[in-house]
Image (tube, rainbow, N blue to C red; front, side):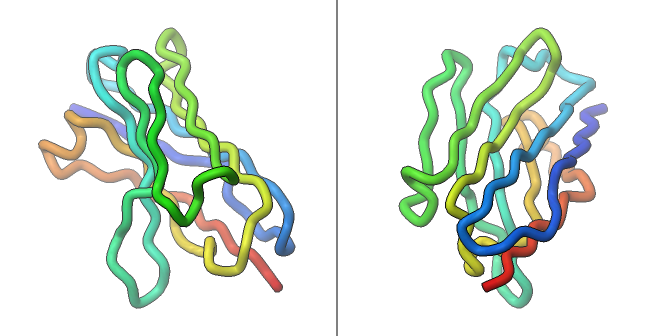
Length: 116
C-alpha cells in the first residue's frame, strides 16, 4: 500500500520561501515519476511540478522559475522548493507518484498560505 506524507507548509509573506517535503513509502520509489499538486479553495486540484525517474523536472507555467522539484530515491523523499511566493500560491499541496495516482491514493496534504 502506498503511503504519502507531506510536510513543510506554513504561513509566509509574499516574496517568501518554503520547502515542502514528502515521504512516499510502500512502492519501488525510484521506478516512478513523482508529482506535486495543489488545490486552492473552490478550485480543482492542479499539477504544479513533476520529476521523472532520471531527475528531469517539468513545471506548470505559473510556477516556472520560482519552484524547484527534486527527489532523493534512497530516502524515498520528494521535495518542492518554493521561492518568491505569491498569494495565488495559497493552497493545500499534495505529493504523489505514478503508482499512487493509478490507485487513487492521496496523502493529507500540507497547507501553504501566502499573505500579501
